[in-house]
Each structure stands twice: as structure tokens, then as C-alpha cells.
Image 1 (tube, rainbow, N blue to C red):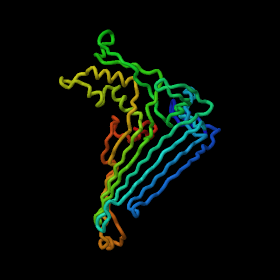
Image 2 (image 1 turned 180 degrees about the horizontal axis):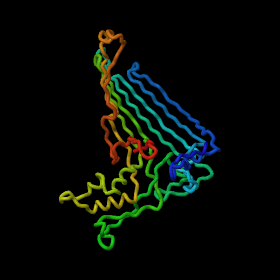
Image 3 (image 1 turned 90 degrees about the vertical axis):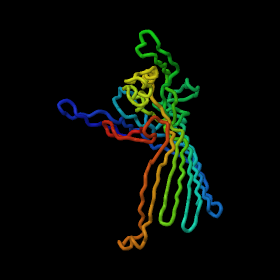
Image 4 (image 1 turned 45 degrees about the horizontal axis):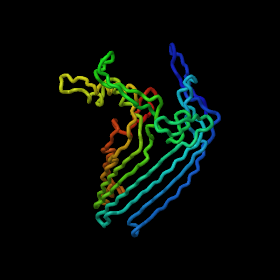
Amino acid sequence: QFRTFQPLAVLNDQTGVYPDSPGNTNLAPERTLEIEGGADLGLFNDHLGAEFTYYHRKTTNALLGVPLPPSDGFQQSQLQNVGSMVDRGWELSVNAPIVDTRKVRWTTTVSMSNDHSTVLDLGPAETCGVSAADGKQYCKLGNFRTNYPVNALFGQIAIGDSALTSGPTASNLWGRTFIRSDTAVYRGDPLPHWTGSFGNSFTFGSFTLYGLLSWETGAVFSNGDRPYAVRFRTGDEYFSTFDFSQNPPVKTAASDSTFNYWNLFGAYDSRNNLRIREISLSWELPSGLVSKFGLGRTTLTASGQNVMWWDNCHCRDPNGTWQGGSDFGFNSD
């Protein structure tokens, strides 16, 4: 609600300030109405358990960050009560003891969920049009568009290319240049539509081995590292186009094409991934041993997180974050 400023050291170490958050004295609470239903089932004398939930929630008077003109001097978007959105999806969990004896127990749990969000309207300040890419009607306010997911990613795409074989531009070897679309088109949803996990627990005597496999699909992220590296003529993607049959390796047509492309476009890569999220081994210490130290039931556990994963995102980790920048804030990879 309040307008804020940040401190800044200026000439001769004099203290100054610069605009930070524009504030908004007209803010009001957003309101959400949710309808949810589900069932918990126990089958085969509770040897198979299942939980299912479906939800549909609509938010009105939604609080969204709307960018202001740069001439206003504020770095942050202004939080405004604009429009409405809907979020719907379902969750399913199934668990069962595969083996259940006095000495050996094996239980498994499978969980899945599906979620989709859509912006319905953005209030009287929205401007409307038709997407040139897919012919889809939309209305726009700031970085938000109706009929698309909340915080959907938009970017320009290549609509053509040309080969450079001669003439004054032949210094680019014979690589391609690219023609960029006039407008930004929909590149994807930053949040996954499908998530799931598969967990297994094996108990033998006093030892328990646990493993959890998880997956995500349907999400896209803006991968700033990818074009950044190529623009500085470095990185695996750029060097992989070199001719290594010569010593030293030399650029090829693909090298210049890659360089030309990433100087025009941003990278929007898939966050789809399958990962071994956790592996752990636990040992319940003998009661006769721990009682000598005045302890009750005691368990030692060795575990690993994010042990291995598979993706195709041209990044270190599609779920990765780092801390850096002048404000030491956290950012998505």
C-alpha cells in the first residue's frame, strides 16, 4: 500500500534515495470462492487406499503486479486489484502394502496432480486484440493476458531466415540470419500442469530403505543463461558447433547461425523433468544399546536429496535457484 524508497550513496558519499515500490492506497483484499470435493477409499480390507480431490476456485478483485511506465521512476510493478482468474485441477494418491509380514514390509505410494489456471478478465484498463500467432482473442494489462495462464511467458519467435553466402555480410561466414516476429507470442506456462511421485519403503528387521521418484511436465521457464553464454561466444552450445577436426578448432556456419539466433531471441526451455528426489537408509538402534545411555527409541538415518535427474532444459537444473545480483535476491534458473 505504501510508496517506498531505497537508500543510495551519491556524490561525495552524501546520502540519497531512489524510488522503489510505487504503492497503492486503493488496495483492497482479493476474494476467492472455492468448490472442492473428493473421496477417501479403503479397498480389500484397507490393503489398498486411495484419496481423490477435485477443486475449482475463482478469484475476483485479484492482486496483480502491473508495470508502470519507466518515466514514473519506480523499479517495481504496482500491486493493483484487477480482474479475475480461475484455477482448477485434481489430486490423486494411491497407497498399498505390497508385502506385509512380521519381518518384511514393502509399501508403495503413487501421487499425481493436475492444475490449470486461466486469467478471465483484467478490468476496465485492459486493451484487447487477437494473437497473430494462433488467432486467439485476448485482453492485456501489463504482462497479463486473458485466456492464458497467470504469469504466462511471452516472447518473440523466428518467422524466417536467410543464408549469407556473399556480399558485405559474408564476414559472418555462411551462417543464417533470422527474421523476428513483430509481437511476442505465447511460449508457455511457468508452472507445471502435471506433477507426480512414486515412493517405496522397504523394511527388513530394524532397517528401512526409502526411495522417492518425482516428475513434472507442462512448464516452461525463461533460460537467461543460454543466450547470455552464446552472446559472449562461449558455452557448450556455441563451442559444439566448431570444427574440431582442425587444430585449433574453427568456427562453422552453425557457429554463426547460433550466435545470430541468440542475439535476437530469448530462450524458453522446458522444465519437464524426472528425478530421484530422495534415497534414505534408516537403522533403528537396539533398545538394549540405547537404554544404557538413557535414551528411548533411536533411529540413525543417512539420506540424499536430488540424487539424479533427467531433463532437456539446457540448464543445470530446471528447478534450480541461485542467490546473487546487487540485491542478493533469489531467482529462478
